[in-house]
Structure formats: structure tokens, C-alpha cells
Amino acid sequence: MIFFIIGLIAIIAIRAVTILEHVGPQYGKMAWYVGVIGFFIYFGYKYKIEHSRSRLISKHKLVDKVMHGEKIEKEDRDMIGAVLCALSSNKDKINYSIIFLSSAVVLVVAFYLDFIK
Image (cartoon, rainbow, N blue to C red; front, side):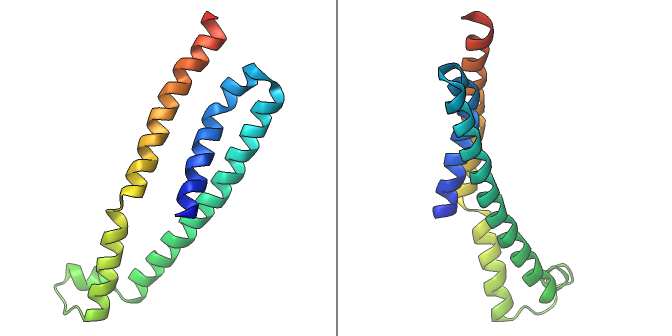
């Protein structure tokens, strides 16, 4: 959960850079650093998890077992269940929604600040 929160903070910080630069350049730079460092931590964690998951799938030949209708042992079934559970998590959906919505809001506000105001 901590990495999810770090990711959300990074998303908001990066989206706020353009707006905060209008308040003061130092605030824009601060938001940029918070965002980039947050993304570094968040995506490093996501890479580690995905890499670990991928290695388990390969090591146990889960794709072959499923595709060829081979017998799936309880341990394999547990791993497949864990992968499917992770893929159906709401955290990624929330994350993508926040990225989309915050990007749209900041785009509108930045356009206003840069060209209309």
C-alpha cells in the first residue's frame, strides 16, 4: 500500500509542476523532484514485482501447463490464483484513473495559465 501511495503522490506532483511554476519556480522544481523520485521508487517496486512474477511463471512452466491442458498441481494453482488476483486489483485501475483525470485537469489549467490569463 505504501508504494501505491508513493505512486499517487508522484502522479499529483508531476501534474502540478506547470501550475506551481506560476506560483513560484522553486515550487515547480520541488514538485518535479518529488514526482520523479516518487516514480523512481514506485516503478522500481513495480518492476521488481513483475519480474518476480514472470520468473515464477517461467520456472513452473505455468503457461505451458495451461495451454497444453497439463495437470496443474495445488502449488501451481495457488500461483495462478495469486497472479490473477494481482491482475484484477483495483489499485492499478485507481492509479490509471488518477493519472488520466489529473492529466486532463492540469492540461486545462495549464492551457488557461499559459494562453488565456
